[in-house]
Image: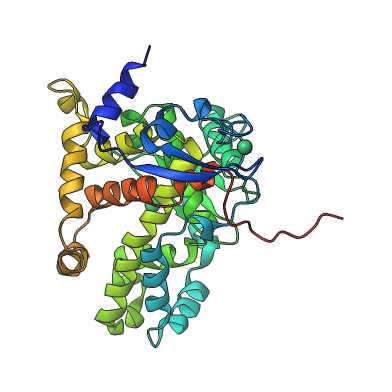
Length: 344
Ligand SMILES: [Zn+2]
Ligand SMILES: [Zn+2]
């Protein structure tokens, strides 16, 4: 018997059973190429076996993605937007100046003075979810975890040498544990892909130019625009890491829907948010020409205090990756690995 949430997810994502996407995946044990229907791989990965050797096609649910490189799941838009940003004259100088003025230490002190540091004796439950995500993604770097009061359902990653993740309490009101696990994976993805430095710069810029003084005033519009564009695109890479950490597409999509709609008591008392219409909403976006509306909207959005714009756009890109990108290849054990120093 199929579990109810699976049936709901299946109906939301692939309503027409005759038109489901499929992929050809190579068995990591014997090399045989197997044709697998994407819905089956998503809903029952542990039932998918190689037609030749009979061994499981996919890694076990909590098996670490041993040695995975962030480039294995980096979104192409993230890569090109960052390259464009780095190519703007004055940007490297700005980063150097800003870090000398502010630096990671200041941010860390800010967290230490205003948020709750989580550890073995303080909110170990939250630390355990972070650890579970970290193990799935097989990351060696261990970020410091902070819990901060805020009605916003949000989380953030700062710093690069000593990264820290801050979870805002509003997030815990809205998400269940699997969904929090996804968010932890998302934040770890930012860390793994080394987004920390540039996101810190964007944060400082967004928090007001007074921190930046004269540099802020002369900061060019193209630079701001490029930085914000990259910020949005970097979310796509982090969303992929979130899904790789939890390996539950329903959870990843629910997180995005809840962030878009606000899963607050006033909402939940009156209605049950439905995934299917939200997926349809995201799929209609896929039909629009991305570049046209993306750049137009960006000019407006960069002046708005909105931490979760473009949510349906993120859903669209995540689905695209699952159906046509290398998500299932990664779960089948085929991905780019990072070069690690060999332990003595
Ligand atoms: Zn095989
Ligand atoms: Zn993010």
